[in-house]
Amino acid sequence: MKKLIVYIASYVLLGMAFAQSLQPFRSINRKWGYKDAAGKIVVPPKYEFEAHPFADGVAIVRNSGLKGYGIIDAAGNEVVSPQYNYAFDFVNGMAKVCVGGTDVYGTGGKWGFIDTRGKVVIPIQYDRIDGNFEGDSYASVTLNKKQTIIDKTGTTISFSTCDELQGTFYKTKLAVAKKGGKYGMVDKTGKVVIPFEYDMLFSESEGFMAAQKNGLWGFIDEKNTWVIQPQFKFGGFFENGFAVLMKDYDKQGAINKAGKVTIPFVYNNMYPQSQLKEPIVVAKQNDKIGLMNPLTGKIIAPLKYEEIADFQDGLAKIEANKKYGFVNTVGKEIVPPIYEYASSFYEGLAYVELNNKYGFIDKAGKIVIPIQFEFVGEFQGGVAQVTKDGKSYFIDKMGKVVTE
Image 1 (cartoon, rainbow, N blue to C red):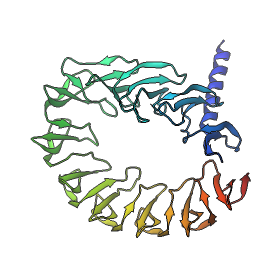
Image 2: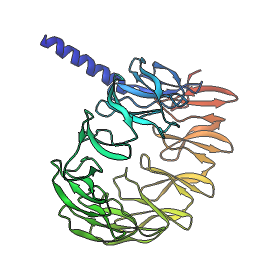
Image 3: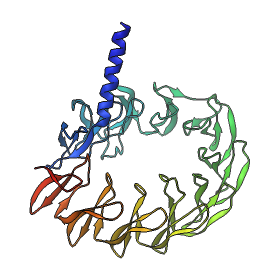
Image 4: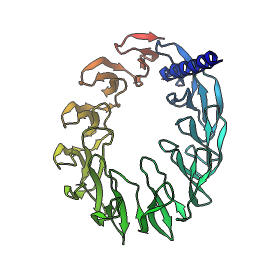
């Protein structure tokens, strides 16, 4: 019996590993399916929107309409036929889903959780759900305008010390709670750690909590001591040692954890690039955009662009004078803005447009597939769809035709 259990467990793990290796692709009929590592079609292309990656042996797929989301397994079997307004990816074997919404985002619908077999494990009854049981096995739910915390069984977590919990304990031992219209924090036993004396309170980030009092924001520590006095119009979070804040409306800047202003509050908009190891923010002033280091205040890329997209694989797409290129994390233009359009990088290549024709460049800016096509799609699973002289087919990363 023990050998049988080990065999079954190994089989399940092997199936999940196989599922993880499947890659979504788009066929010539513009539908989505999945291929294995060898390029063999495992799930035929029949879904109208980009298929999600596999997780826990299953994947979210989507068709158009208000009931477009469903679930498939690694063999392409529909575990749940498209029927949800919205479905999030699986986390720890559970996925957040919505039914009855008035749009594909679930507006006005009801939310709950299903498992990888499609079974409803937490009733689809909530007006809103924040969180997906990642990390601490709690989620914040709202029903009839009341916000509560539930665990993975759907059981409500409540404490007599507060009126309601406003957030989960994810990544921290404390959760924001509310009592008598004021905010504080409690631990997992319900003990009040931060008293209920704030107009608003954000969860802990790098040891600090953003707290609002008398209309102004500052930062407190877990001992309820002001480490940065309230002085900002809008609060924020510390990340990589800095926080982007608003001193006055439409005036943003950055501070470090000592409260020192590292970027003056003169910018119209500013947002960090959180996916990078390097501390970088995109800053906008008088309709011009550049890059800055929020720890030193140093300008990385001059504020001369109309747009800078988020970084991917160490490069960010830039727009200048309605032309597109790419800049790296030290502000160097790896690809000058000379193209009529450029996509983000997929699998190391980006498509670019010049004189109404398309081709592909690598991350060094070199044209690796000539600019000759009327239409192209991004690379997925090592292939991309292209159209030339009215004929559509697939090419590999060398530009060689692989599928008619």
